[in-house]
Every structure is written in C-alpha cells, then in structure tokens.
Length: 374
Image 1 (cartoon, one colour):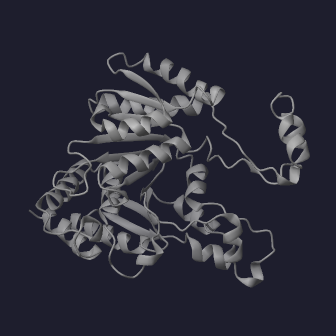
Image 2 (image 1 turned 90 degrees about the horizontal axis):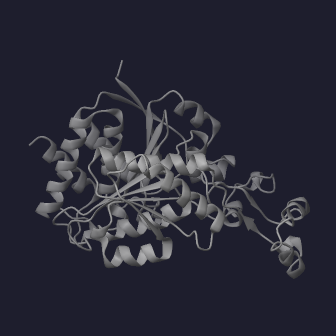
Image 3 (image 1 turned 45 degrees about the vertical axis):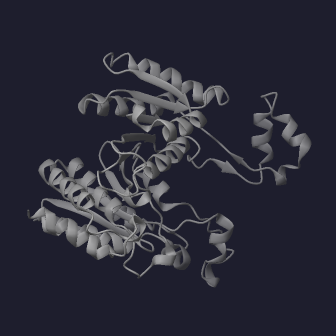
C-alpha cells in the first residue's frame, strides 16, 4: 500500500497541463503515493450545477492532502448563462469551488511564498523573499452576501445610525451587501501561524497589513489581536501597515519586508503584488492549510486562451508540489526539488514564454526533473 493518498484535482484549462508537469516531477522523485482523481471545475458546473460535487468532497476525506491545478470562475449571472439548458432556472447558484474547499475543510491558513530566484529575468529585484499569510475562511470572502437586501437584514442593521441612509437613497431591491466578518479566533490563528513561521525560519519581522483607520472594527480587531499575539514572540518585531501604503512600499522597498499577515481579501491582493515582484503568477505557489488537511495550488487562473498549447510556465505548480512535500514531512525531497527549480532558473537555458523564450510546459518540467538526478 502506498504511503500517501493524494487527491488529484487538475480542474480547468491549463490546470491539466501544469498538473501533468507536477506528476512528472513527483514520479521522478519516486514519491510513494497513490493519486486519486477528483471532479472539480467548470464542466461540472455546466453539466451538474455544482463545480464541486459531493462525491469529490467524500473522496477528499479519504486522502492525506490534495494537489489542485486551476479553476475557471465567473460572476453568478455569467455562470448561470453557461448551465446546460435543462439546468437553467432550477435555482443553481455558482460559488467558487476553491473557496468552498477552504471553508469545507477549515483550511484557515493560506501561505504564499514569493521568492526571487537568481537568474529569473522577471525578478523586480534580486533577493526578495516574502511569505504572505492570508486568513483563508473569514473576512470579505466569507460568502455572507445579499442581493437584493432582505427587509429583515436591513431592519436589523438599522440599529447602526449610518445604515438608514442606504434605504432612504435606494429601494432594497437595488442594494447589494457583502460582509466582512472576522473573529478574534481567526485573527489570532493566522497571526500565530505567521509568527511561528518567522521563528522557525529565523525571519526578521512580521508585518500585519489591514486598514484599521477606516475599517475600524474589523481592522481594529486584527491589529489589537496581532499585538497580543506578538507578546509571545518578543524576539520578532511586529510592524503595522495600511493595505494601500503597503502596496506602495512593497514596490518601493521590497527587501524591507519578510513575513506579511492579512485578512482574506487583503491577503489575496498583497500576495499577487508580491508574486509580480518575483516574476509573476507563473512562479506563485500556495498552500491552503488546516489542522488536519491541506490543498496545494498555483495561484494563477485557468488561462483558457492557452489550453492545449503546452505553453504555460509550470514552476508555480511545481513549487506547490514542493510545499506539499514539506507538509507531508518529506523534507529531503522538498529541498531537492527547490534546488532543481533554482538551478534551471539560474542556468536560463529553458524558459517559457512569460520568461521571454519559447520552451514548453513539458520542456520546463523535464529540465527540472533532469536536475533531480544530479
């Protein structure tokens, strides 16, 4: 019996291409694993009205962790138009399957390393090494939304003096509401994860990024909680920044920052910015990590225009597999894999289109695999 059962979720578009690249790498490493395919993505939305069928959730519960490729996601009105005709007007509402996975399995910590490997022509500056910790289940992506705004919700919210003006200005049928719900437990968890990482890997600082001067209650809770958590890590400085200023300072002085910790939406924004500093989404790996389960994925999308072209950069997916190896405790394999990626990038003989050349997805995977045997 294999040592690990790994859920295999290619998803949509180029997710299939980069997952093939990851499989080549894992097979070369001889990871003792069984890969269990799962249904997820746009075709299951169109044909079943569910991009994450229950059978996939049931399968995931029998595995140790999951590798995930990419997902196509569209606003609910556009998604509804692509349902099979027999499913139209049956009450199906599109919800992102990756967001649902995070919530279903309480994958509370989203870790996104952004590292500038020497020799990458897309690096903004050499030496950048940022780890973004994003709270993964609460905040603006918690999914508590309304349109139109129910009368009962409006009435309840009118205890706040600033709420009534919205009803005076527009009928409730024309008001949309998305909530930003944060708990002290959720804030404490993600900040603790950031400090534990900083302590384990001897990082210089932890920076909490929010907007407490405007989002006073939710942002204030995050900042107050971060200060409390920081007391347990006296050797690691805690910095506090506003999201807008942090974006500017990352571009201006990226080397000043080490570990960033944010709520859900701000973490999504800041991690994409950080990824661009080190080459773009072709290098952006991520882990969705809970207490008992984890899903590893590149943060790029499904890139429909490149489907079937064997063109996209698989390094983000390969580095996501590296993160999976770390999480499984296969540290030697993880180190070997990252060293292989770094060597291929530094040599510069194989580069995909985003790196200014014309090598294929397969070329890059084979180049990395070749370094694993050196």
